[in-house]
Image (cartoon, one colour):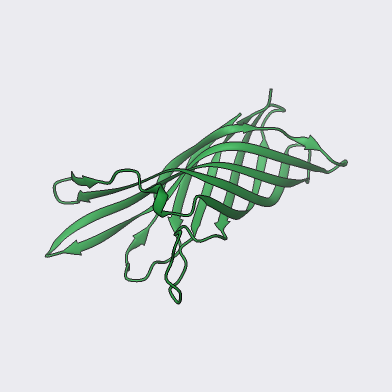
Length: 179
C-alpha cells in the first residue's frame, strides 16, 4: 500500500495570471514484479486528487478559486533498482476522472462564496501522463516515494480550436509499505 501528498497544478490557462498549486492526497495499492536482476515493473491502482488554485482580484477584493479534480489512476512504472534500497522509475499513468468541483472563497473573510456541483461531464473523462520518479526503502518493507507526472491530454472535453490545451501536472511524495 502507499499514500502521500499531491502538489498539483494545471498548465497555464489563457486569462489567468496568478495560477498556483493545490495540495491534495493520493492513496492506493501496488505490486512490484522483478523483470531482471536490476529491473522491475510496478503497476498501481491509486486515488489521486489533482487540480489547481489561483487568485483573482475583482473590484479590489481578492478571491481564491480552486478546481478539485479527482481521478482513479493506473500508473505502470518501470523501475531500475540502482541498489537494493534505491530505485529510479518512469512510465505511463492512465486516469479516469471520478469527480470535478470548483470552490470560490473570499480571501479577506475566508468565507466560501460558492461551490459548484460535480461538472465532470464537461471534462475529458480520461487522462494520460508520463511519470518520472525515485524511491528509497529504509527497511525491506517501508519506503519513501517521489514522482512527477506530466499530463499529456487536455482536461477539456470540447476545447475551441486554436486555444491552448490545459493539462494536469502533479508532484507526489509519500510512503510505501510492502507486505
